[in-house]
Length: 310
Image (cartoon, rainbow, N blue to C red; front, side):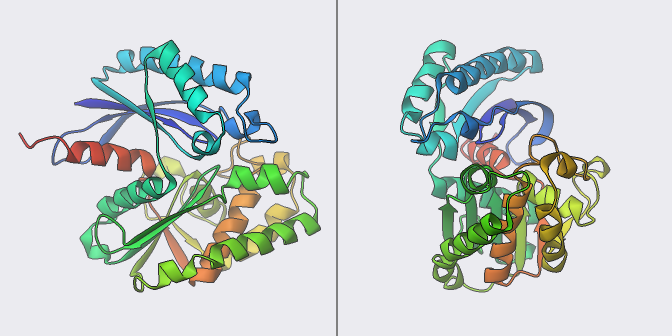
């Protein structure tokens, strides 16, 4: 069965088509995406403007045609923090459904964390022991820890790379005082949830997912994406600590010239680095192992689990 998933994130909207069957791992067939950057279409109250709404409607409409071209039999869609936290998110979703017929499901932050954890667990398997997951998107940071497929604790914090950059790091590059203030606030926010992570036990493996973490790993020497998803990639805390001040001294154009950093994410990679550095310091993570599967794969895996065995 070829399944299509529309993922409405804070930065990018994706259509992922996969060949998925009961008892087998999902095999990506094709991808289609647009850098919509919904956070940039929000006013000071967090409301999504008409341009952002109309661009989302247009892209979902395009996805219907692309899905037909790809031979997709079943299409589902979900939205994360940008829609979830916007005061008019329901209105935007209603417009999408009215114009396209596609009903996008809003994932609560905890579910986003749990499904990403499920993807990581399936990727690394039971032999990895207790996992601690770190995932950062444009709007939120997800942390989860557990020994099973459903984590013992699943958290979502409003510490996404795009959100922090937009709200607190407006300079290009930001001023040292701005960076210092963000660093302090991010660490305070993460420290408040440390007890919830610590009380479930010590992890055997620390896992990182998301485009931001993959970019940071690439910047510190990990293999490029062209070498395939099965190459082991890691992000070391020591290397990240050396990278952060380097990123802080570059503007967006200069960052975009670095390996693994796209022009669309160049402005926010510093914000993401500050958050991941804070997590690694506070949790005591010396190395994150990069997982190529994340939320979209978790959604697909959960869907497959509900299909009866043949």
